[in-house]
Length: 492
Image 1: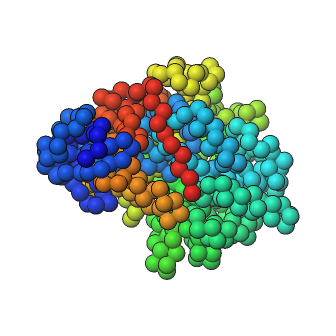
Image 2: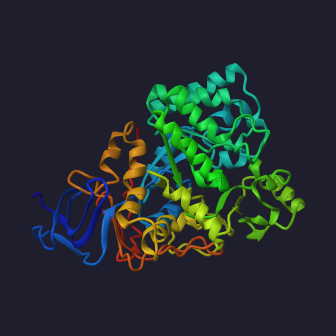
Image 3: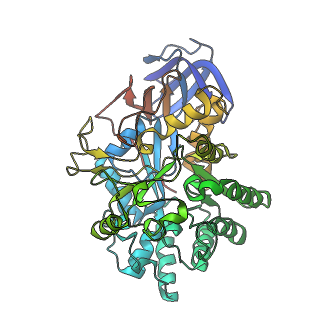
């Protein structure tokens, strides 16, 4: 065996891809797993060893929907067991600049980006600046970028997206839900481009017909139609929050599309609240009631206030439309609403994905390497606790509906498979076995729990003991390794 071996000794090794679930040793050399040996103490001595008896050893979690791409947000995700965090729903333009900026700063976990249809459209239709930070959030609620595009503008958008794919973008992200009157033909053109390139489309679906009778096309029908008509792999982002109490109808439609041969994958997160820019079209006071929301359903993060009424909501949307809000659409204390959340999570081959958002800093952004996080950071708890919460609720509580390996699969190999056909390096992620990337999480199932709340969204999860990214410890003995920035780019 090669030298400088790290042995994780005597843990419960869970690898959903190979269906391994047995006590054994994991042997790592550099940035790869080179062996997994059943039986405690079965592997030869290593140069370094970690005693992980009584703990679960599994692939690092792969998050295909993470907007929190800066170092502080990724550190919170690492403490939740995430080793790869990808920005695929909103994406980036230009992706080359996004990859270069992340590489220059360093990242604690692996990172990657889709080509952003929304940004491409904002540039070509509304004259948004290229490469500016937070451009999507600033423009999201503006009507200019949602205006009908001329044939020349649509051609320019597609040409820009094609260039981004050539530069290594992991697919195309489409925020259709933020442009509710978008011509459905444009979405089909984007899907056809993705099909031609062999990459997925990651869609935030527009409203369902039950919620907006005037929508040009039902959001769920649009996703499956694109898959059927173009042959594109359509990935349905956070199917929980865009389907709400109509989840059974939506998942039934997805299932019929799959049975007919279309490739449609889904993801969801285990919370009853979402988060986005307060300027988003679906948070306008006049349409809130369609989704069962009121102004006081919104927590506005920059001022940490519950929005009092429609007038205050209009004021906030006009003053700072990019300000983030948390909106509560299901009651997590209501058994019926909890069952709705759970049905999306339990759908066959549904991936767990956080939809982690950038943190809001009331006192201004701190040094990105500061740890613990300075006071004044606000965020949705899914950015810090999504994966621990999903595993706990689905496998570790009394009466849980899934086994531990089944839930781990939804955090690892299931999301990795979304990208594997077009991103060969993903064949080394989401699994733990010879040749796999040494992206590994070790957790204590007796203590694993999300601790982030809507009042304090930045509390790290408990019970995550060790996290390795490309073989380097990012979390050791439950503590963040503040000098570790071993994340690498994931490119097409």
